[in-house]
Length: 118
Image 1 (cartoon, rainbow, N blue to C red):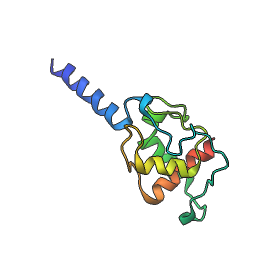
Image 2: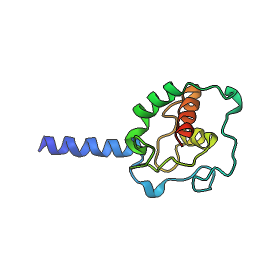
Image 3: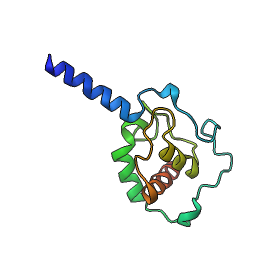
Image 4: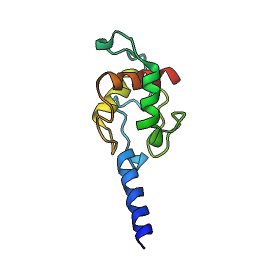
């Protein structure tokens, strides 16, 4: 009985941390993931990002919900988002995604890596 309870608790914790329900996900720009020519570089970083750091952080903090290939899972697919949209989502935590999973330059690096994969 304890194993079942622990398993259910672990599953609930994982779903809460990763967003749980893809149907409540919101596009921070309200454009369903379309880039529409949005600026893909954040002004404060002069377009210089550490893509290796971004990939490592994505794999550790994001892939469990958004998939290893950005295809989505419990969180939405990340294809077509601009750099600024990804950073805004990381900061704001749309839907049931927790906010600020990574911060500052790390968030910029993750966003740059996501955009680079598209």
